Length: 70
Image 1: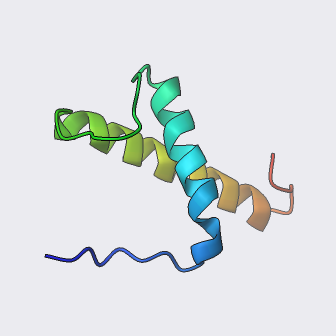
Image 2: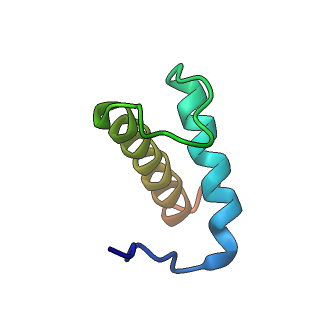
């Protein structure tokens, strides 16, 4: 089955990948690159959930007029 998650801005792909690996490192997950089929879904969900939290915080700070860093 093909993946249907498409990026709204394909140019942001590299930045999202960096955010993913940075978040995994913050959570103490080593070697998050490459094959991840042996990781439990709880681990992958934690990375994705924390990515979403960071992106929401960034958007809120930009909407509040405080710039990208808060």
